[in-house]
Image 1: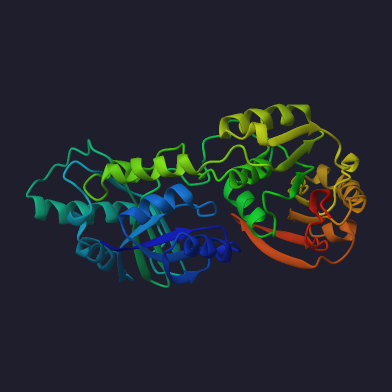
Image 2: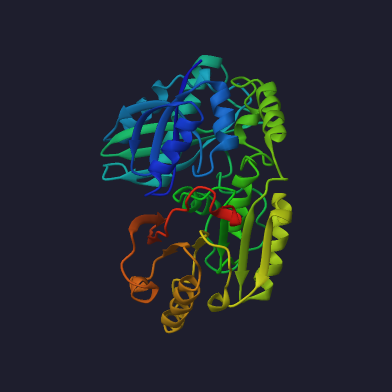
Length: 385
């Protein structure tokens, strides 16, 4: 059976997610700001949860309707055939409701009325008044835009950026999904050098290593829909995970480096990399950003330097970005990719970038500046002539 699925992502990353979904073999039906819609069967729900690196969740669309009053909203929610999706013992609730430019905007009221409508529908169908809710979780997410309501079931549970390897972080860490997207927005491949001189807890190098070793980002975590045995055969999860484990290649030849001035961050980065199963693929080192050096040409510097979240930090930013620029200029034919919310960053990075992409990290607008180095000639990498 085919379903309509919706994959939310950070604003500005829709094209990356769209390419990922295409590469998995699914047909995209619509792209909106922060959402990519596609069609897939039960196996597609499993595969997309396990394999998508830049999506925040995989949501199953169960209904659409218009509503300008709570009565219309109640009737719309009640009209959805919940009995097709929820067994009698399901634990179900409206975990989140988002409303933009709509008459209905109270989150708590939408949650309360939504649950009430679901109970009414299921009571009429199953002929029972009390639901034990002792079974698997079926969280509901509702999106309202200009009074048009989209109702979904959250197949992921915890957000997909929660890979499970990051137990400790530094201040203002970048999310795993954004880190993966930054890498995928470059031409980097596993046979090229990648370095992050502001690695913090190691997220960018770790996501690069997961890509290099072909480790699916969701391979070692749990998803809400694993308990949906009324919709998805448990064997599908087991078979897909088995195939993905067999596809892992931790012997891949790759050069990935992470450095940071803070020794605690290097310790945390190594621990996170070990939990991710890629510690052997990354070299972490305590180093000032201005002291990064490497003789090999054609590498990629992909980094998330401090933005100056606190006023006192802003005074240090010019010197910090000058150090980054100095390290980059001492490298031979490298490319530099920097994500930052600091408006004056380019003044100290060496001028106008070749490309600039806006990415919203929640409500924070960031810029992904791309300074492109030359492409290597055939056989020129790793000293091959």
